[in-house]
Length: 183
Image 1: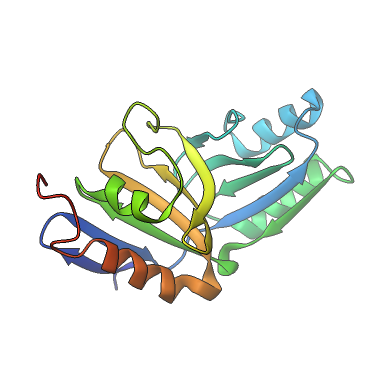
Image 2 (image 1 turned 180 degrees about the vertical axis):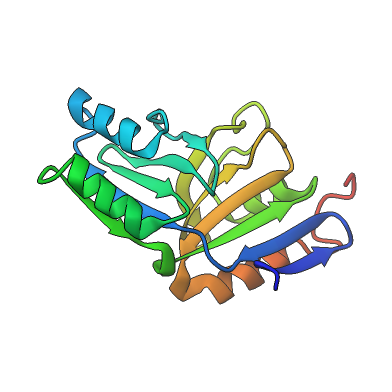
C-alpha cells in the first residue's frame, strides 16, 4: 500500500499526501547552550538557524520560533521519552504526528503553486535548500521547505483538521492553465 495519495497535473506539479510522518514539537529555551547541546545529542542533528531545517521530513529538525522546534522522526513516542530524559523539567516535548498532515509538491511549477497562497518570496534567490518557512496558505496555518537540493520539490505541513481542504487547494492551484505558460 502506498504512503501517498497523489494527483498529477499534466506533469507540471504532482501533489502527494503522506499518510504518516512522525513529528514531535519541542518547546525549550533555545538560547541556552546546554539545552541546545542536549537537543543536538538526543536528535543527532545540528540546531537549525532561524527559518531553517536540518535533515529532512524523515529525520529532521526545523526552526518554528525562538523557543520551538519541530522534530521529524521515525518513532515520535521514543523521541519524546528521550527528550524528556535529556532535558527534564526545562522543556515540553509532545508527539504531534496525528495532529499534522504532510504534503509534497513535485515539479517545475511548485514554487508558483505555493506563491499563489503564501505571502513569501519564493524566488530561487530568496528561498533555497535548507530554508523553512512558517506562514499561512490563504487562511490556513502551514510551514513549508525545499526537500533536498531539488528546486522543484517542496514539503508542506498543516493541521490534520484542514488536510482535505489543503489537498484540494494545492490540486486546484496546480491545475492546467493556472500556471504561467512557460512551464
